[in-house]
Length: 139
Image 1 (spheres, rainbow, N blue to C red):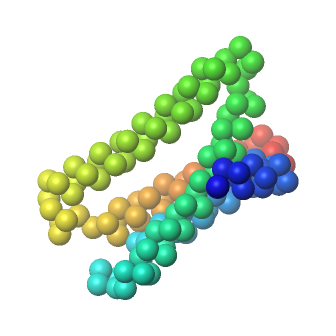
Image 2 (cartoon, rainbow, N blue to C red):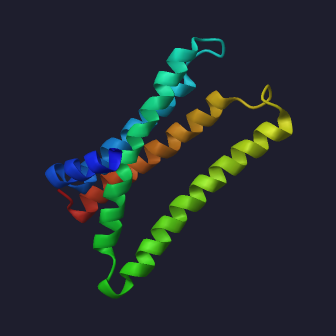
Image 3 (cartoon, rainbow, N blue to C red):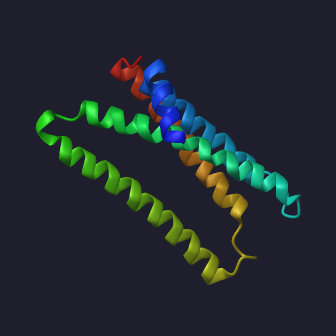
């Protein structure tokens, strides 16, 4: 569903604003997940975590930008690299978090710290999208 909405928003606004919006929403959502107290209400954590789904808006726009900037004879290679990087990054993140939780126990690893780091990564992505828009002259 997010991909369909992202496609419509991208057609109306352009790739860069949609990418910037999706990554900014991810940063904000990760900050909100990191903020609730350890013993806070579960519904607050679920609401904040559910808002992380807004980052799905960025992926179709990123794909469009990557494919548009690749030379015609390298489209297949660019698509493969983009998708492999995305999948590798996701698998790596899950593996690292799983290893941390398994090695030290859940009491020794702060998920709030992990989500603060995730918020920082999304913020860096949003800044890159902002500077990419400016340097590429995106709409």
